Length: 374
Ligand SMILES: [Zn+2]
Image (cartoon, rainbow, N blue to C red; front, top):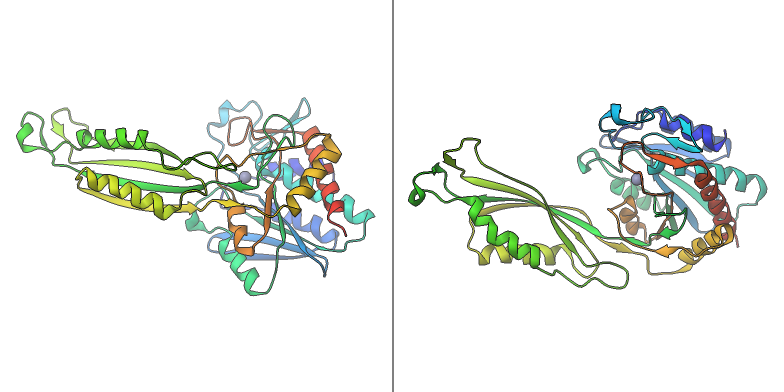
């Protein structure tokens, strides 16, 4: 199947996390035609597809996901989110850039490469259907533990996430920041608004805390990462009545942290601040990922040279953005690089991908596959 049709077919499947909804069936039949041995491995509510070809040498693994985020208000889309319509050489639809188009670009690259070259290393394709969802449904961490226990190895991991900024392949990622979230409950004393001596207003209690948190420098970052950032996403308090001072306030917050801070450091600094203000509080933490960074440069150099061969330009290395499933690959000790299409439209209304960009990406992937031959 050609790149455009394959991408369209996948976009037309409503695979909202944690559902694959049939994308694997299409991709598995493409992979089987190329003689990959394919297996479905399920954990919790999530099915994963693991396909391998080759019997010797190091393993390159392409890591991707077939699930997509919800569409938002469908009537605001110019092209319906599951139509896969093409307009001005762009394919529209939820998941076009994140990341169904890129999976198809890699599949097409494999097809071209395996038809003409003799394979002297191993290639794996690992696809999940819950990259965008919640850990309760299951991520790929347990699956990787199973593969490791079986003696599977992954030396180089190409994550197909949309890394490009303004032009295709202008940016790659070799690491990501960590993400640590917290839910804080500040406890006051509810009462009639006219009796200040009988109440403790949790909204006043939080003002000093917010000022300190806003000004606090958690670290200074380093050459690979910007400094750790702290943000508040929600604050809720109040009963709805105008004559009641509420008894509690809930604040949701998140750290995007670099490799200069650990989650333990951040948790203890945060709790120290709360204790210094003498607050009565309850606090729940959830760690969605530690920072990772590829420090060996073999695979990074191979990718950079593939990009230069095709586009004539050297990419920028930038480790910003959210977390990715790349973080789990550190368990395999793999060299991890992320390279995919433009991230401008991802998760937005009218998500789209340029067909020309997908073809360039396919050519870069072909170049990389050839570069990895010894
Ligand atoms: Zn993605």
